[in-house]
Length: 214
Image (tube, rainbow, N blue to C red):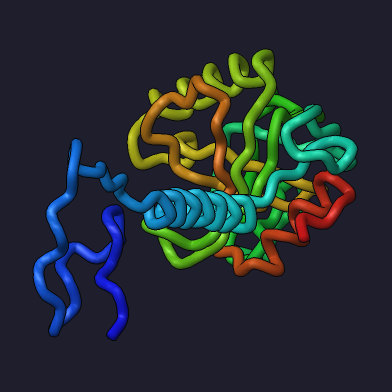
């Protein structure tokens, strides 16, 4: 017959068929709780955090100058023009107007506006609560953010329901987005949405930056 487990055995109670353990002389041994489950749980939690962080990086691909995320601003290969809209009419687009990407509207723009040649950040935004389409998020430089804030303030305070409530974002003589401005945007965070699927959004980023976001 096998000997009963010695003091400090991991068994809490003797296996069936064994009598009570012999009395122990001196102080009762102290059994420390096993550490491996706690370490395993911490490691698993760390792996989960890394997986979540990885999913975020994949979903929000950053593009910066030199291809190194989180280092330098992006110098645009093709500038982004931002102007207040003066008039909108259906096609065919007459001379002096700019067509919208889908070809459903023709825009006459107010003079002035701004030309964006550098961004702090540009990234893809996948479909989410804002809608089923892809978008492009831009972070303007501090100087451009101030100008953009004044431009959106002017559009917001124009007569409600008119074309002047809209600002046009133009790339290469094509209006890629012309949202209605409902509030001044002073923080430099801008989103371009134009019913893009992912390939269309990637092509626009490549057109602006000269690099693919893949």
